[in-house]
Length: 393
Image 1 (cartoon, rainbow, N blue to C red):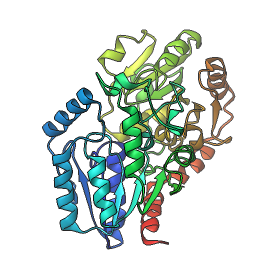
Image 2 (spheres, rainbow, N blue to C red; image 1 turned 90 degrees about the vertical axis):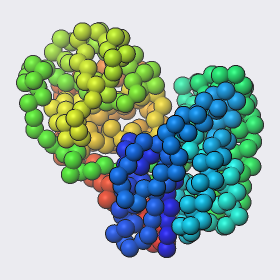
Image 3 (cartoon, rainbow, N blue to C red; image 1 turned 90 degrees about the horizontal axis):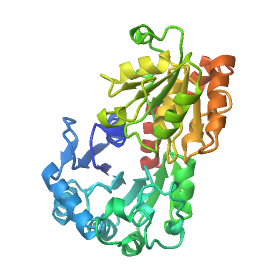
Image 4 (cartoon, rainbow, N blue to C red; image 1 turned 120 degrees about the vertical axis):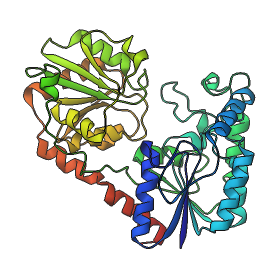
């Protein structure tokens, strides 16, 4: 058996690390495999880069100008198909295809022509919309019947609204495949089953974390920032903005008592300009161990996300023994249970504030309960689920 994975990146970011995790699990079973990608660099020996970064930037520009997001990159797709013809995979595992790394029509025609069994992991909702990977904040449900006059068009196309054409094109090329959909949350799987892809089987395989890294990790974090007597409210994101709830933390900084300290990780100079002096900003941790140290030092992890496919940061926090409070957004609530965290409605800042204070003062959730939930997301178990899916166990 030979298995090919196709993704934007290899070995970095969430999806790139998932690709390598699946690849290593396959190799342990003696299954030959490759990861075909286009962006960034990777020294992973089974990774095959089939386009240059310069080429991908040009395709992104073309997409912005012409509005045909997902239907450029013909040259790269020809090279990808040549690699696939040489490798001759029995199974293709698709991940993110919306970073200008493939021409969807060409790739799916090749898959259909060769009747290759295909699995597609939906890390967001782009596969069944015209343009957008997320639509909750705009309150748009056109994807259920047919995208048109996209409210987020300007984010993806400067001049033309081709959302109707893109939607119909995706729907057409997705027919007649030997396809199984996977998603990291029940939420995104349910969304897929309500789309034009409803004829295909769809199952949930959670994203996994490395429990050898994300675990209780002592450090001098509190001493370093003078927080020995503070209740630390932590937020972690890698693209701070309204979608991830930056405005919520700004509001909480005005409301929480002086013995509470908000710490945000994953910020940048632009975000710093918006932050008040009573929020600690950490641009980037040196490594995952340092991030685990910050999770461990915190009293509560707050995740006021408004659009979320899964919520991996929730599981990382739990693995370090820190309870979570999150908005009821997408798959984020699925990462916790009543023994290790709380869920409040989106934009209900009053309830979020009350839960933060309750968790910090009453300590209703034990570290042991957090650990128990985190063990459900052990990456070795999750990658094994993919392998079992491929071999039919």
